[in-house]
Image (cartoon, rainbow, N blue to C red; front, side, top):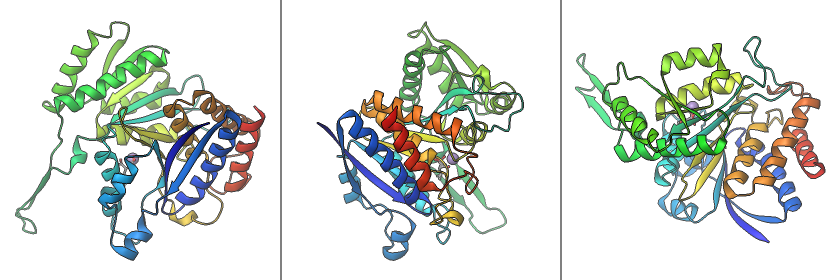
Length: 354
Ligand code: IPM
Ligand code: MN
């Protein structure tokens, strides 16, 4: 049987309990479709950092780079200053493994509450492709006259032709393969960020010459937010930079039902990709068997797709859809009508039956 080497990083807070359910589902679906998953667990996160002062050692990066995929729970600990674990683990993984695409589907399933009035599953079904290794996230910049009344903090957005082009090319290819409306929208801010988004826009138009089957569109990020609320049905595939992608995908998550269901993939098409629920570690729910594991399960589905196990991935989605329609009352922690582990059991059962 085909065997995949998967690194599992349960991480902090509710990470371990949602990943446990994700693994349960992955195991059920692997039995059904006749492939094997060899899981190796890594304990990176806040607890290890507090114990050893270590975030992500280089030796670990070397091991992770040999895997077929990485399955990540959540990184973030209430006792650790913001930025240390995020930069030291999550962003370090994305950068070091050159996962230059952050793929975040925004899809409202039947039976899920959306705060958007008069919008349903037919209206909310698009994908955000976020550049994942550049922009404001590189850490470029610094302080001048730190601590003085004249202090200046500079945070620079780095946009390279190669980085922008590979992201846009991925987006064009993705849009073509998705084959829905074949509309690719560049989300930027060309009216203010006149260097960064000039490069994005020029490259976008150049590539469009090669993809004449794709209709291209442009919107500023502020307008994009407005349309996501007012007319989400307009969107098919949105491509954008790292920071804007971060912001608009939280908005995307809430219109598809919240962090309980929102999953993302950090993709290096030529290397090792990493799959995660996009919500945080939710420390206040940790260990209570109350948090919704569906986002982690959907991240597992994206992992299967990327590994080429499309039929298994489709089964997971069908099982999730069935449970949302019939069984799960709400996506919010403690209001699902069942516990974290019961949701996992149910999806695993449905996966085997479908
Ligand atoms: C995300 C998160 C991260 C990001 C944080 C935790 C660094 O918000 O994955 O969207 O900003 O990318
Ligand atoms: Mn975010």
